[in-house]
Amino acid sequence: MTAPAIVILGAGALTTARRIQALYAERGVATDCQVHALQGRVAADVSYTELGAHLRELYARGTPIVALCAAGIVIRCLAPLLSNKGAEPPVLAVAEDGSAVVPLLGGLAGVNLMARDIATALAVQPAITTSGELRFGTCVLNPPDGYALADQGLGKRFVSDLLAGESTRIEGDAPWLDDAQLPRSESARLAIRVTPYSWDGREDELVIHPRSVVVAVVSEAGYAKADNDAAEPDAAHAIVAPTRRSRGRQRFSTCRCALPMPAPKRANRAPRRYCRPRYASRTKPCPSSLTTTPASTSRSPSPRSPSIPRRSAVRVAV
Image (cartoon, rainbow, N blue to C red):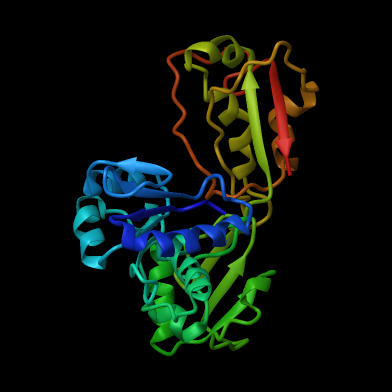
């Protein structure tokens, strides 16, 4: 759980802020969950001089925000930054006396779950306005940790179709949806599919990838350049990317690792079979939704091996 920044303007909100902070203290994030107060007005854990600039800085860093002030103040402060729905952290407005909890931003980042938790701690009802969550009891587009949507834009259309009366079926293991009040039918046109395989572009499927495998490949050149942050991402791409080759009718969903990485004193050598193209057919699936970085380098590939680095160190975490 990422600890939120609890932002207050005056001393009247400090008691409620401490109650919210205590909630996160019980969950083991007390040292990270701090109360931010206007400098010179009230003593707190962190002081700031200008509310708008401070909220925008927290938002830009991806820090969840619990602001104990009017919702309109928060909206006007953050308005210049509201361009990418998929990249917004949770933002909530809470009344100074704790009588109202209003989730504002971050529907795909768990803001409604935060609102419910805070409202329970304050003994009030959260002001949830998300249609899908009210109808189905969960946010279909916000899978739990360890999973990620293949295509967020398609997900919005998918939920709209469900709200319009369509039914769906679930393919794969999705235990967090067991209690969801979704309209289900084995013959439904729409499907929620949990799979490590790449999405094939069908618009009637909501594909969710499990984050199952992470592969990091570091070449000798990468180690040599790690100190100046100029390592070669092609070393990673050469071994990971071939897993996208067809296996039957499906392709594994893969990620591309980004370098640099800290240079160890001595790199462990991987067996040569791990660095050959033929090994790609045995590589484990890895979700496409993991962070990707374009690979580019000015060095020309070796004529002996045009795409695979001659000597690499391989690390795999499952």
